Length: 252
Image (tube, rainbow, N blue to C red; front, side):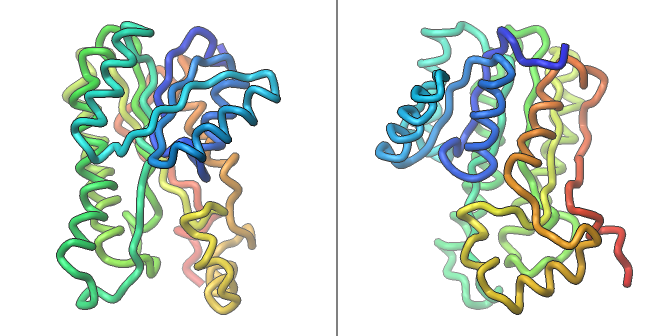
């Protein structure tokens, strides 16, 4: 049971960071994978790299916050799979600013991509998830949903909302055999955090708060996501796994 054989999985934001690591790990575990990204060149490059490793995944150019693109994803799944076993809502953005420096367009964009998009894609794909008879949704949240970690108020708001979305859907959709869980990473090496982590002062502040004295690798997060997607985690729903190297329990 420690595999994802015969599972059909959709991973949003699949060409970078945690999404990319999840695509690779899901394939290694035997799943069939559809992933999305906004950049066609990056999709083609990743598909080619996987092919050279003897793996095959399908990428679709899609913005998960665009309802027309969600319809395109749903159409592909209906045509090729007829059902969906796993949905990983990973796509996300951040704009780091002081609260009063955000334009309305900027903070609404962060909320739209990080909070509204997972809600809408989960709703639209609900019929396909229900057909699975044993589906799993995994939402990639953040430690910023639980503490102020200097990532900006809109980002924290969106990830906190995503945690409650996880809990509410877990209860509502349990009767349809759909589990819903979340993963909340602390700082992880991804393109989204690259610039921030290159700042020596900020990096040292992160390390000072983290008992394991390092930031996470994307593969460490994809391992948790993979477990929550497996049948082995079949009695876990409505939960948030905090993967933070001990940061949240480090008082001094």
